[in-house]
Structures are given as structure tokens and as C-alpha cells.
Length: 201
Image (cartoon, rainbow, N blue to C red):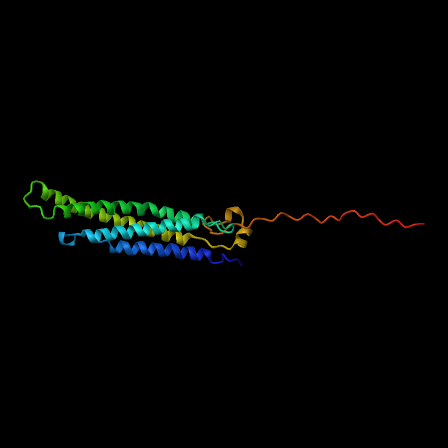
């Protein structure tokens, strides 16, 4: 038993927790079907801040484990799970930013006369871009959640002593433990030569 016992389940729980947070955010992203459902600048800005915070949290999880120098742990599988999730999370952020740009455009010209040449078409285009970008946000957030959950499902917590007993081909690839280092075989103890005492005649 070591102080790292149960670390695999802790790491899996952390991955599930972050996945759930992205799922919750995904559910909060609504795709407008009519103009009345279009998000305003306040709502859009809050969403940008929320997603930025989630991405920052994932980066923090990576940093926390990257500086863990415990010789008994191999947190590579966990770190890779988080860094892989950053890719679709980054795409979601890019799409949300593009959506915010269109919301800003609509806000900028909200009071312009409806008869302004080309403005009606521009507004329609902006509305459709918002729909498409928010749909992409939801898809990418779903990928983040699936990726994190899949990594958590595959995380292995085989005890170090069991790992040591397995052959290299049988050892799980996603274990958070390192195989204990083999201690060099101790050489037989050699006694220093002690000459027999001489007895006087």
C-alpha cells in the first residue's frame, strides 16, 4: 500500500467531472430558430467567459500533473486525455467567437433603417451564421465530453506490484502507475580474511 493507492479512480473521477461541466455548457448553448431567440451581447459575452474559464481549467489540470515528479506515477495517459480535449474545445471557442462577431454586427445596425440597401440581406446572413456557428459549438463540446469520458473509462489502476508481475506485452497502456524499479540482486556477503592467531611454542 502506498499513498498513491486509489489515484487511478481519482483521476477518472476528475475526467468525468470536467466532461460533465462541458456537457452542462453544451446544453446551455441554444440554437435560435427565429429572430426572437437570437442571443444578445450580454448572453454571448457571458458564454465566451464561461467557455474561456472551462478551457483554462483544463489547462490547469494539465499543468498540475505536468509538474508532478512522483517516481511512482505515470500521468501521461491523463495529461494526454486533457490535451486532446483542448482541440475540440478550442474549435468550440473559435465558433463561439465567430457567432459573437455576428451578434455584434446585428447590435451595431439594430437601429438602422430597414430600407438601407443590402442591410436586410446582411442581417439574414448574420443570423444564419450565428445558427451555424452555435451548431458547431454544440458539436465540438459534445466531442470534448465524449473524449474525456472515453479516456476515463480506459484509465487503468492495476496496482504496481501486479504490474511488475505481468509481462511487458500484458501490461496495460493506460495505467497511472509505473512498474516498480527492480532492485539489483544483492551479492553474497564476503568476510574479510582474518589470519588464524599464532600460538607460541
